[in-house]
Image (cartoon, rainbow, N blue to C red; front, side):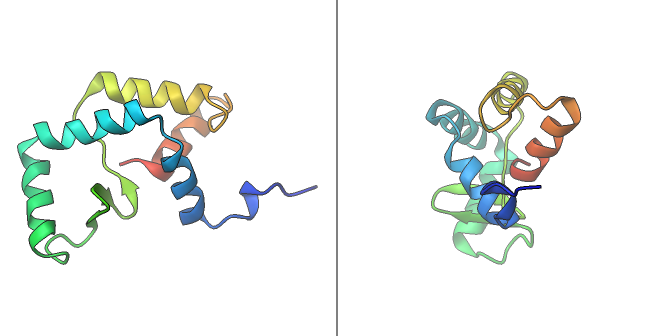
Amino acid sequence: MVADALSRMEPMECQALITHQIQSDLLERIKLTWSTDPHLQKLISDLQHSVASHKHYSWLNYELRRKGKLVVGQDPTLRHDLLTWLHTSAVGGQFGRNATWQRVRSVLY
């Protein structure tokens, strides 16, 4: 068995790679969910004032993350589009429902 470059990457490196490959439209739509959700707005505000205000969350480089995963707000259409993107893109590779779900869970919250 021959290992490829992605299989040798640490999980956080792989998450960063996938997150940076998110289409700019999708990333902007994710960020929009943060600005339209009062709970997420408060969370971001708290984190901007004190990085330790919410144990598992971070606000770094204008990105809201939970345990290193990009937070996606309440937008069913966006969530569907993200699933489709991860399933059909070169990153997703159409490996089926379970593999796609695991990929989503590894980079998005």
